Length: 350
Ligand code: NAD
Ligand code: DAU
Image (cartoon, rainbow, N blue to C red):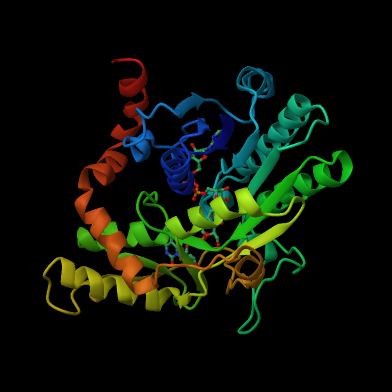
């Protein structure tokens, strides 16, 4: 058995990675370590909760002393690090939480791994999950490659860039075996309804205005979350130590076009007259420092590790809408705050 630590496994992407690893690799013990901030929701993992190779540890990555003890106790062979503060608008309102978790939390994990492994690095791996936002903002043309210079422009992306630099510094200085991937915008089931797609879904469903920042001209590259989890699986197993891999959907959308497509899907699913949802679009004040365009060149990952996105966007968005419609309770629990009681119910009241 290998002991694999996944941080941030109760979040959106982390829960898909945990589920994939628990189900696909019965020979791995999967330890999901998560503080359960507002973004952590163990309901995301209700289906794997009772699996014999799944374990949950409630822990803040910013608290080094207890973190170090956990590393000693469970003797991790590898770490997949997703825990982070992830929402750009929150980083603009409150940068310090991002500096704390994303930078200090990452260094704590690096130190805990270095301390545990003591230069015996055979078969060990520290895999850091990062974002395309570290590369900054593109104009009308060009793509981010693995060698694009870092140019983060929000407190969130600057904190993620810092964490990437630290991970690479531990590779160069201490030879810690690391790998990094930088991914574009994810969408799919279980995304917290502060992010564009689930937020717009919820507002459309409830006939509330859909807030589109600026004129909706900003462009993002969208990837279905299970394709990201698949890429993480590949990189975890076959990625080269010390390397960086870009992951993207080859799927650029202007925000306004994406919202128009979502409105069309929602009209059809809710049996509304065509054009009904579109009328809810409301242009609002732009995000401060709003990056214009992100676009990823994932050729390296495609050529070297034979990965490519499998879900086309129209189909993936429709699947996502169906998931949210079929999981009303999940969304309502978040909106009411009840999801935060799940941990106590699962772990203390049984
Ligand atoms: P999320 O906000 O949904 O989940 C983050 C998880 O981390 C939550 O479960 C939260 O409880 C946990 N967490 C936060 N602070 C913690 C702390 N101090 N200690 C322990 N756990 C803590 O995030 P997400 O969208 O799933 O993103 C996961 C990772 O992937 C992040 O590192 C993010 O930067 C990166 N990423 C996200 C996207 C995207 O589109 N969402 C794209 C590329 C990269
Ligand atoms: O590119 C990867 C990044 O994608 C990840 O690193 C982040 O963790 C993730 O949150 C995401 O960042 P974005 O800022 O791109 O995602 P968000 O869903 O917040 O916004 C997507 C776009 O939609 C962006 O241009 C801002 C815009 N927007 C967002 C919201 C919440 C709106 O127009 N209205 C909104 O209400």
